View 1 (cartoon, rainbow, N blue to C red):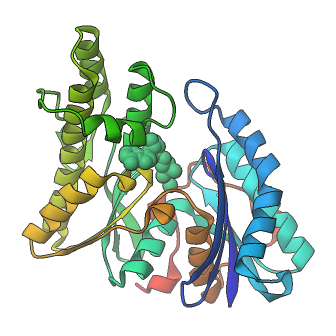
View 2 (cartoon, rainbow, N blue to C red):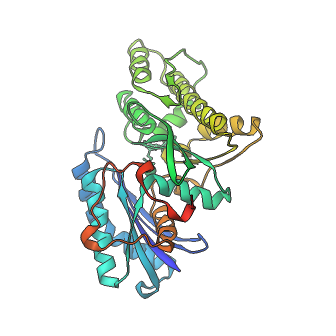
Length: 328
Ligand code: AMP
Ligand code: MG
C-alpha cells in the first residue's frame, strides 16, 4: 500500500511517497526563502503553487510508483498559514480527483509525532516539537495527542530566525546560528524563561539584541543563546517526562536538526535511564513523507473526507484531532 502526502503548512512545499512498512520511497521538497526579512504567507503560497506540480512529478519518478498504485492522497490540513495550506490542499484534491483515490486530511503536528514514532520503534514516546512556528511538548493520553507544554509567544525557530536577521544574517537563522555558536566561548547571562511546562522567547530576544548593541561578539551571543534556549526546551521536556512518568522522547521540527539541542535532550533523557530518538534531518523538517505516513495510518481507520468537506484548518489544535489508529 502506497500513500502520497502533501505538506505546505509554512515555507516548505513537499511531496512524500511512503508504503505500509513506513519506507520512505521518495521525498521532494522546495523551501520558500524570502528575499529579505521573514515569511510572507501570500508569497510563500505562490511559491508552493509554482513548485508543487514538479514536486509531484519528481516524487513519483524517484519512488518508481505509478498513479494507479497510489492508495490515497494525504495533505496537511493544519495548523499553518491559510494561503499556504490552501495551495497544498488544492493540489491534493486535484490528484485525488484525477487519480480517483480517497483524500485524507492530516494534522501537521501529529504527523511529526507519527513519523518519529515509527522510525524510532518506540511505542509511546513524548515529542519535543521545535520548529519555526511551533514549540510544543506533546504526549498521547486518553485518546488524543495532548500538548503538555508550549511557547507562550513565538516558536523557537522563528525566534532564532528573527534574531539572526537582526544580527545581520538572512533566513533561515537556525543553521547559521548553529555554525556561529561553535565559535563562541563565553556563556553570557541571558533571561531564562520557563513557566511550569511552558517557555517564552521574547525576553531572550530583547536581551540578546541589547548585548549586540553594546558590541558583544556574535559568536558569544550565538553560543549563549543556543545554550539558554535549548536548556529551556530540555527543562520543559524533562518536567513533562517526570510528570507523566514516561522515559522516551523523540524530536521533530526544523530546530531538532540542531546538534546541541539533540545532545542536551539526549543527555537529559539518558541520565533518567530513558531513550531519545531524533529522525534524520530530512524527516525532522517539514516533509511530505510524514504526511503520507500519517495519512496511511488514518486511512486504515477510515479517515477519508470528500473533496467538498476538505477545508483547511489553519488553527487546528493537536489535542482536538481524532487519532483512532492509536486506540484509547
Ligand atoms: P520547520 O518549521 O520545522 O520547517 O523548521 C524550520 C525552522 O528550523 C527554521 O526556523 C530554521 O531556522 C530552524 N532550523 C533549521 N535547522 C536548524 C539548526 N541546525 N539549528 C537550529 N534551528 C534550525
Ligand atoms: Mg513542522
